[in-house]
Length: 195
Image (tube, rainbow, N blue to C red; front, top):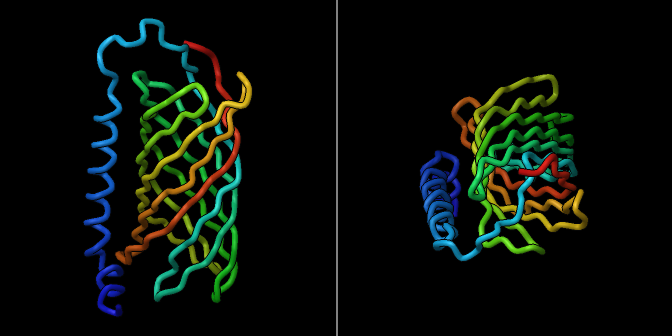
């Protein structure tokens, strides 16, 4: 068990995990490509959306320490076409560990692909990368972040959907010390315009 933790901390397993997750996302993306002209009149999609809400992060602090952080997120996205969209994700987390208070601010950009959509639920897979600025007891660290996961939207009305990200894996690399975090989000998504 100790050797597994050491391997995980050294980044040996996390690289294999990244490859496996990316392979699964590519496979799901290929499966979800529309087959021919089954639908002659596709539904109109919004030009853009903005999702806002609450976020939870189970954060790896190093040395086998984890903390639970809570915060908020804002995620504007632009529809590219064929189920793809580009987005920016702005997250803020607050909490504390044994050193003191933690403030973490993420700024990432990515691409999502809707898969197996229906009028009642719109699941998607996504990948994003960017920077996370973490402040802990006065010490500030900027670190590379890569995240991937699955989300879905449930339309409630024409002007609002429930936006849920049940599982997002976040890889951080502060000063050469790889970390693996788990993230979840829930909020509301608002469409902007129609194509």
